[in-house]
Length: 310
Image (cartoon, rainbow, N blue to C red; front, side):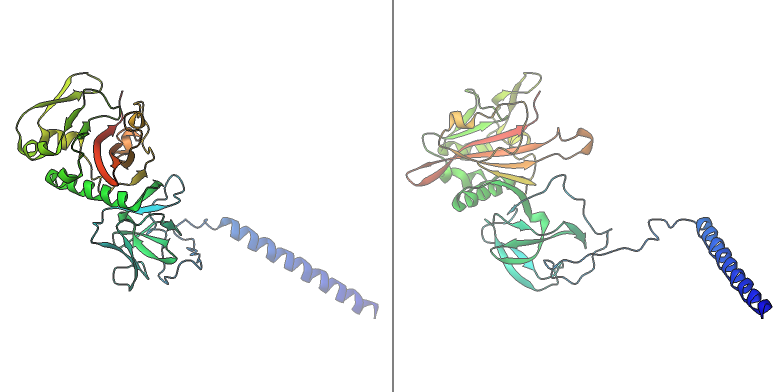
């Protein structure tokens, strides 16, 4: 009887040692296995109630996140007779569930930008509607101004893009006229042209002195068309990345004295923060339009080109 108990006890101890031995072997084997590469790890896709699309978004489709949080956008690159479509899904084949007007502002982003089918898509909220839009037609918005002035600014930017200065004749004040400044700081030697001058100016081969080049101090001697290409529409300001409504977007070492010259004026700034990464943002560009109201009518009083100056 005593021998039977001893045999049972020994059997239990043997079983325990075998179990410990197996665990040790498994642990050593796990340590010897190679670690999975990032490509081998499973992709975890999170969902949110704000996104109504059932489309799966992979990490490779995601666009780079901005270097800061964008609170609101404005519609750009859309004429007053067009709309920016709001889609149910992130696809042009998806049903259109709404439309954003060309003057649409305060558009709230509800997620990160991602790329699909060579299009940057963003899920947004506008006037209690939510859906997907082509983000290339949105610009980061800063400040607010009346809607009629937003529309007027878009009309001017579109006219400049198409080099149709004759369309601006009715917007220029007959006495204040239109100032052209190659840099942010407004000088007394800036050139002014009145409504009756524009038609002749567009086709003129005459060389004007528009100011002095930053850095060298050499006179800026250009025809109007050459000045237009270098100091007015040197970037697609009809479709900028940032837009400031009576708010200065760009900052450099040149003083902005618009309020001193036009104390009752309102400004729209169309801005690109940079084009070539190697310059670290020093190649930024802006175009500022200044409007002054008189007797209920807005007049374009200044076209100001802005860039980094020495």
